[in-house]
Image (cartoon, rainbow, N blue to C red; front, side):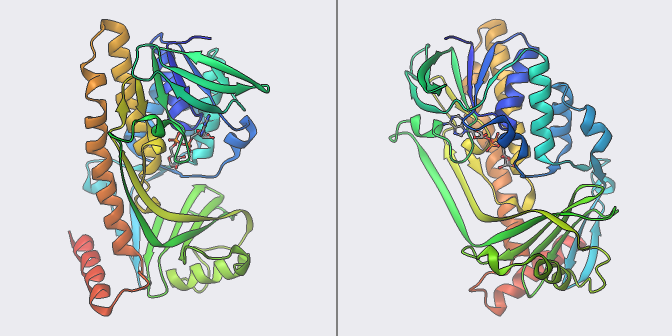
Length: 374
Ligand code: APR
């Protein structure tokens, strides 16, 4: 089997790359370990920056997003219950963020890619990458119980944080920088009556909390908890109560109880793999970097990588020029580290660290006051 660009992973990164290449007349095959049902049902991120929305439009995956995306012109920060609004649009000349679940982004991308005759193969785990330093790199994968080989001009490793692509970069050149935070997020997806709020981030002496929306009737709430927390200790009503305490919302005007559709624990972890390319292998999205979810950067960064990588590949197939391909990792990493800095800053300012002394608590408050008066 042969294609021009072999893509590992049908998450937002792999699917969007495949669609953008297709629109430029470049062939690709996407190999995905899990089933379509699993990939389309995963609850993940849900805040899209303007450049992400723009690229989804370019890919033609925007019909439902335009109908259902909730545009937020600001965010709120609650400090010990006192809420302050940051008017994003006003401060940035009209930029805004859109609340729209990654689950839907993936469903939309799969639909447009299949409608344009795309080759996305589910339940085809890639077990090995071969010859990535040559101009005929290969993927070895399983399909219907048989081992198969896909040969290509380029491999895009879009296989997420647990993927195998990055381990194909030789150890002698690969650097992994990582940070684990001493807390996690307990998140719930709740069916609640229509709520007209924006994002509310809370710093509270009991710990961090985040109120956010996935649609007009679906809220995604998070509370900071210890990394090894047992979910069984958190029946739904206890989570709602804790959210209301941290947001100082005793009447539940913001945090409304409802049917809980998903409950999960997200560890707070950051990592970056450098470089993001080797030979004919290019990494994009979570395969190359994880940011803490506090700044809602993960999905947006994955899309930003895909913008750079698709432009570089399109330029190569159009003119044979390799300059954009050669500088891909350097350009992508510049943005990745900016996003790491932002996510680390938001995380440290808004969370309560287990070993935090009163001096640090005051520093985090001072940082917040600085932000709110900036
Ligand atoms: N073979 C084939 N597919 C694989 C393999 C493998 N060996 N290993 C992993 N995959 C698949 C996973 O099953 C997953 O569907 O790769 C896909 C990676 O998708 P994501 O984890 O969604 O990663 P990415 O596309 O980079 O999306 C960016 O932004 O909001 C964040 O973390 C969030 O998923 C999100 C990410």
